[in-house]
Image (cartoon, rainbow, N blue to C red):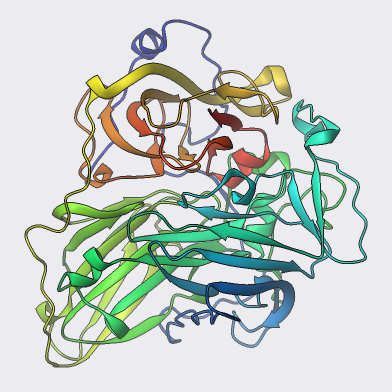
Length: 514
């Protein structure tokens, strides 16, 4: 079990070069959990009593062009009740976009919801005007909208930064990047948390010749798993502590949930604690933590190992074995599990050892039969470009913490999000060394640029930090160094905490790639 290194107050400040330490005031500040849990108000099903759904694959309306409609729909999640989801095409998760490297895709998103939306391709190397900036909004046809963002956290937004697309808009994805497990989700200013909680998320898989040529499991044995937690009201509706349930007037959550919102029901691909029937062969599992705030430490019971083959932004150089995988919100791990190691008829349980309640169970696998298996895990997977500390043209420090100065907002370098005012202007084609520091659990995500983790508190990174990433699990009182490579596009992008409640309460910053 990997435990985070701890720095003393003096050592922590020394790494930052001085300054005042603002404590988050959270009850589990130094613990492994990262939010407050909502309790469901209805009877919950027994684990492993329903099948795992696999999201449908989106079909193009014409070559290279896709259309997704954001709309409300009633679905059965908790047996015997109906839940209104806000889903792409009315489903949760949304359809999987299964695409190929170098084949540009244009995705038209039509909004039929009562609220504005902005769709971000998480991990995508996309032009700035298709990145899903939080004030670049799609508003349903015929609906008006008065911007309300920012007032609760001391943010100031230039009126000219609001952009509205009536009815629908096109997002252009060049896909000039390695094969990887990406995902798309809502990114609306101040309301990302509740709108993702209601269902606005789905997978986008990038494939390429290098990945295809490997003898890794394919077809029905290559399965995306969107893991998230939710809570439910007595009538089956999603329970979430919004200050304004309409999501139109007042942003934010009840004060008790400012750490982040966790649910007591774990969903995998939208189903509570499902079970998947598997052959006694290898499977590739694309693990995504799509929770608002919850971290998971995933283990297989009774016993078993994950062989990691990919990270956020694509294949590792070589496979890495793990007894457990700690996965923060928005991180992805591509792992291979060999079910031939278990007797036919046995149940293998995926558990979360960071919880001892209902969120301990995640899902199960029922080993149904023996079968032929032509897959393998090669010793060499890829030759991704490596970068070194000496490649960095500059060093920047970003301090993620709660600031009392801004009515308890979550801030970066003591400042709440100010759209249009970048904290950094990196140059396209360069590498920078970023030193990230924290007071709490902050999964830090960088848009467009990818990075490699260099150190944790001056020591080697964790075994699960390998490969090219777009999100890093920054833990309490840690200092993590990352080497960020800016390749792709110029323009205004973002970095932010991917605890969605922290993001909604100002823990974001503009990055202008010049």
